[in-house]
Length: 227
Figure (tube, rainbow, N blue to C red):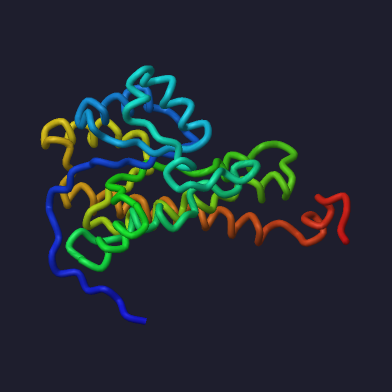
């Protein structure tokens, strides 16, 4: 397996396309309009409840800037939201490199676009298992798959993608976008990438701890039928 060795990158990257999919919708009422204010031609990709929330916040402006992920990928969401963002076009948009001609050809071939920012926070696994009488099935259902994948892809490609996992960072990000013509700096992207990997590491640790501490009998007993 060959690994790309990147030597040429941009300090400032304009945020033209954002993917937003959050469980905690705190701060979206300011963040979503702030993104549009910084770049009126921005494209926001979103899913499920997040899409509906942003559509409500933006009102008529949503018609111009907001697109369902399913419309972008051409694939409807799986029942129960099981698969929404695990799509080739999404990950080309996250992982391709600006100055790699082969990557740019892949984008053109598939009709994908570079995604410049990912705003994701994860299914509330820790809160779920802390609730009284939580079942193993309830815990299992709150293990997020697509979210950590997108966060990791965005954070890995900090050379041009901004990974946002904490609503407390929204004001600082908007301030930078407004002061730099809707661009983020390499320094900001690296700082947020560090935070993103700590976030997914803690999430996986919580899942591992829960499974380690839950007996086989407790898990088996959560299901009415075992064939």
